[in-house]
Length: 123
Length: 110
Image (cartoon, rainbow over all chains, first blue to last red; front, side, top):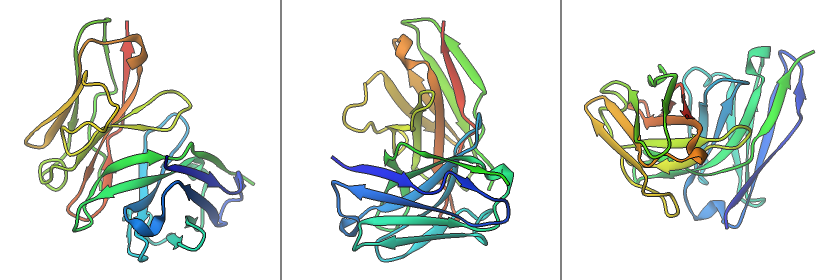
């Protein structure tokens, strides 16, 4: 059974960098799929942040691209998110998920999700 | 990229059927058969209900079905049950190799 677990600081100061890790169990990241990050501000909808393949190939939301870095660590079977220069508006629940893709990398959907971790941006 | 358009809320009585629409453009919904739907109960992570417009993952009830016409995708829930009360989100792959979500629809079972 594939499981994903997010971890990281629950409080980040404005203008600083948000850093989260997603640990994957029950499946080897190196075996396939893309692995992604999605966030949800309180009371609002879902926003796709980006995704990564075990080779390091990435796709990012254009509105966040200049501030986002997603990395993969196959030795630890985990991937991570870094979002720089955060503002209070980026307070949200951050989810990691497994992304189903076709041979060209087109994203079908996200079939396994972590439980989510709340990150508050505040001084 | 602009969010896909969903109605903010829909409602129905137990046993009835409801349909939630998801409207995009030819660069996302209309251009690819990579539309998926998610169900989210309060305080929980989203759950994949439909992928590739109309396919259900193993374990998802056949009361949930998806379709697409032009730039609009739809999720139909038949035989409404109290447990179906939740938020529903559509998403689509885009021509920019990204993913875009809809704004979400709150389903109320009367």
